[in-house]
Image (cartoon, rainbow, N blue to C red):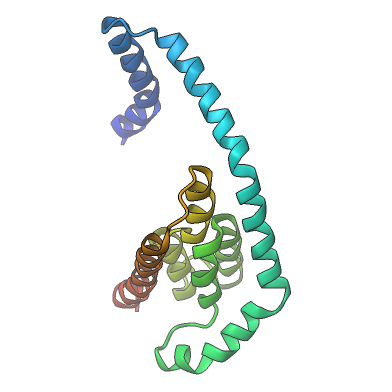
Length: 176
């Protein structure tokens, strides 16, 4: 275990040093390249702000309007039939929209049910098995100007659904 800890502490500084030495050996002006990359990164971050604000406002409207509760009430018979705990369904929906919102929901589920409970383990597994598809598409695709994202949306949501279902199956098999 000591080796893993030492390796993890030294890996990033070693990687950065290696890149700088390699660039210097190849006669690349490493400092100037770093500064230029920083300028591009800053302008990209500024261009992402409108998309990020739009996404956060959309999430707030979706939750505050009661649309999330209506959707959950509508799907409750199906979730009960599939033996999916109703507490994790909002997490599955929120995870596709917001990573921080989903993390907050996961924390709440773990605090109320315990980390070793079925719901706590399921929430943790869902958190690690799915992605923030709408966030990625809105912020990153919008920042680089990609407008046609239909296929990426379909594949991303399918991957999230598979991750959600696989989380339920695996946690049920391993911890039940």
